[in-house]
Structures are given as C-alpha cells and as structure tokens.
Amino acid sequence: MLHAPLIGITIGRTQNANSPLPTATVSEAYLRAVQAAGGIPLLIPASTPAERLNDLSARLDGFLFTGGGDIDPQRFAGLPHPEIYDIDAGRDTVELELVRLAAAHNRPFLGICRGIQVINVALGGSLYTDLAAQMPGALKHDYYPNIPRDHLAHAVRLQAGSQLSRTLGAEQVEVNSLHHQGVQRLASDLTACAFAPDGLIEGVELSGHRFGIGVQWHPEWLQHLPTMRALFSELIQAAAQA
Image (tube, rainbow, N blue to C red; front, side):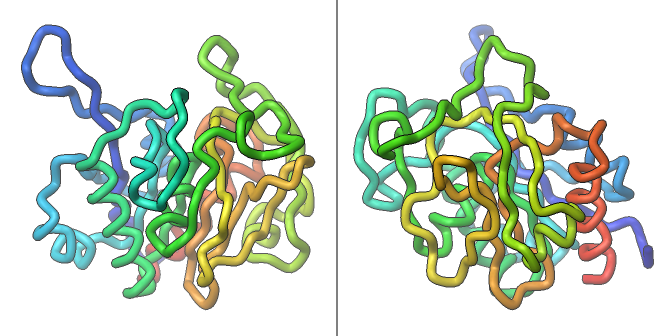
C-alpha cells in the first residue's frame, strides 16, 4: 500500500433529549472495519455546508456511505409510506452530492445499506419506499431492531465476473439484512451485480469506475468472515492508489 488513505465516512444525527442540538452518530463497526483494512477514517457530518463538499471531496482518497434512516422520497419521486423514518434533508444533500463527485472524479467509494440506495438515487435511480408493500413476492428483509446484527438472513447470488464477485472471491454469500427499502429502478450508469432470492438487487457497480460499489447488507457487522473483510480491503487498496 502506497499510503494509509483518508476515507470519508458519512454519519447521521439523532435528536438529543438534553440539548437543542442533535448528536452526530455512527456505528463504530464502520470505523473499525476501515481501520483494520489500513484506512484512516474521517467523519463527514450531515451538517457539512453544500459549498464545501467539492473541496472536501478533493482532499479525501475514498468514501464510505453508511446505513441509517430513509432518503426523502421527494428526491426520487417515490411513493409515500408510513414506515418511512428518520428523513434528514442535510444528510441527503451531503451524501447525494458526494456520490456524484466521487463518480465524476473516479474516487473509490463503498455504499452500505442506505449507502447503496444513496448511490442509486444520486445517479438517477429510484427506490421501493417499503419492500413489503410494493415489491410482489418480497422476502422479509427487515431483521431489526431486536435481532443480532450479524444474523445471516438469506443468500445473495453474485454476478459471475463482476468486480464484487472478484472482490469477495465467491459467487454466493450469506448476508445479514436490516432494511425495509431497496433499489427499484436502477440508475443507468450502474450495473446490478448481486441479487437476493426474491430478485431484489443487493449489489451495484459503477461502470468503468476504479472502485464504485454498493451493497444492501451490512458487511461491517460480518468482519469475522474473510469475504466481508475483503470488501473493505479492496476499498482501501483502491483509495491508496487514488
């Protein structure tokens, strides 16, 4: 590795009962996975001013778009649904623009759960705002909140020859599942490269990009598996050469 790359990690925020200001939050599982792979995590607040994002992007070697609440359906003409939760307009703005910048400047990035959805919306795709209500034949995908985050919920079939399949060294993996939304219309610049048994897209790649991958599961909670450690290792290797 040429150097320890700086990886920008997007974070959410929660309302603090004891303060008028929200608390910036992210699971340490993301940070540990990046650090174990040789990267240096740098947290990107949801409050980052839009006019600073271009400068920020230029200073970072790669990005990790993390899980969290739902994207505002108005961003992709999505259907309203009562299960939609934790919309954060600031976070949407920051993440959607950073995906576009990373794509435009060939900056390595990985999207996880909400992250794959952000990637798809940023590049022109749409989402099911609730899988159970809108996707015929959908499996149960919302294994939360009272289920271990490393619970292996279902298999995912990987497209042979895809960058994701090569990275994981497999054509099928078992994954956890902690989401109620998912990719509906795929953005034109993306390629679907992983699928759940019900046909839901579980992985995407940005065509012609150095490393632009999104996965619907949570590999940061599955770091005991070599396949899931490899996903972070490849991100860091690509970012080190950026």
